[in-house]
Image (cartoon, rainbow, N blue to C red):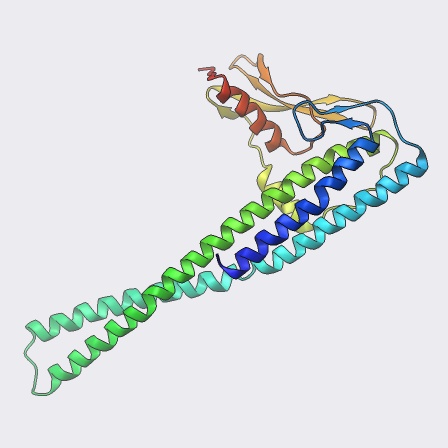
Length: 266
């Protein structure tokens, strides 16, 4: 694997190993049962103010770790642009070399030329062939590196998204208990959320119209679920209620219900 891709993947693994146990401990302290599952349940009780402040500090530390890792990933991801440019340039050069060699070979075979000229043309053909032999493995290596980095980035972004999803439940309970001074995610994390969670209106899947429904839980906290409607707007299926604000998590959960039961609305 490309060294940068490996480093990105390692950062993702380290982040998950560090955060998940702490998030689970926080969920236990906040009386959130089976966090991150379809059976997630928030018990209507709150810790003391002192305990809430401790939990808020831990929560903000975890968000800071996500933001710090995201900044590192963002820096590493910037290697993609020059690498892609190099591969594109090399491919153009390879195409030019191949075309020129074909033209030069045709000239030797069909065009009469003064004494000495064919030798020059043949030398040119050999040079072009050497260029091709030099560029082809570089292009292959470059494409493999790009693919490795893109896969590592996708894996890491999904890991960050899953951690954000778990922390959403923590945030909901903290808000329910009157805590609202939560540190925000940085731009890179927010861009991941926007990119991954951009659910189009009237999302159609196997004849179902998939939408997000918001259900109030308290004056300050909402729960959400994905619903599947028929063309008449009648709800036929829905995912379990969740405190996540990530629409795609709910949509994917509902699609899994549809697929596992082989359902169609059309």
